[in-house]
Image 1 (cartoon, rainbow over the protein chains, first blue to last red):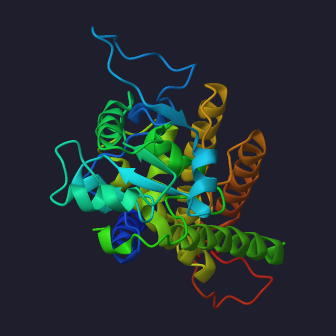
Image 2: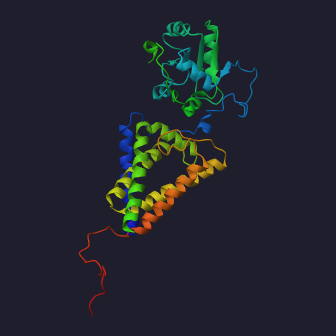
Image 3: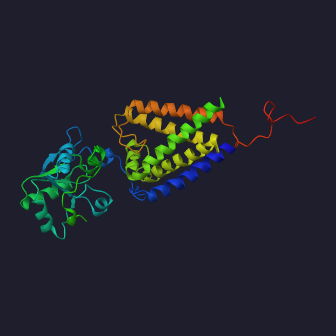
Length: 183
Length: 152
């Protein structure tokens, strides 16, 4: 009985310590937010051949050309691509590909400036956090209509980028000179 | 024998302290690792992740300091049992995940399961070698029974 009480005490103290450590962590877990697995959030499945497909509506939505995380990482490291985050403001604030511009489907207050910055890149990669990549496709289509020639959507979306975590990944890449526009 | 038990206790405590320290810089990533096991409700994942790290710290400290050793070792044995079952379940289900064990992104394999089984055995051994009540300095000279029968 005494051992059980001691176990409970260690567990309770540990929980308190863990919550404190989380608060002090430079990258804390958001306690009030549910955390979905990559599979549940659709990450790693967007547009992948083995993934179940989203219900097809008519007419079929426009789909941008996909780019793999591996390709995108290489371009990110070499500063050869501009990145656009099409998720919500909260998700963007919680973490994004470094220097990615936030361009939600509803638009950006200074969208012309964002598009002008993106024009300096030969290729633009748009990502969201959805299973279907529908939001990223939407934003990619808007950028295409704005005149950007090569706009692609990140295969697997943000969760796949995070899950890859190769040496220069984990949501980070080299500074590419877009700091001024990064919120 | 006591030296071996002390070494096992320090090793177990040290491993878990190290494991917790490596997770603290990126608790969000560890929460994602926990979520990828898909055995905890998404709403509970962040709190469970924080609690796991905290329990590793608390149990690690108590083991290193030799306080409540049995309780700490049994708690860690429970954690390791959950880790082992969770990892095995994920591997059997074909879920490709990082174990999140030491804060890195090392993919979980059956070697990871084996490592957890070894640590589980170590934790059980430490618990078995520890007295059920807090260790107290003994005033009884060696060679005499620590709890002699009451005088008639």
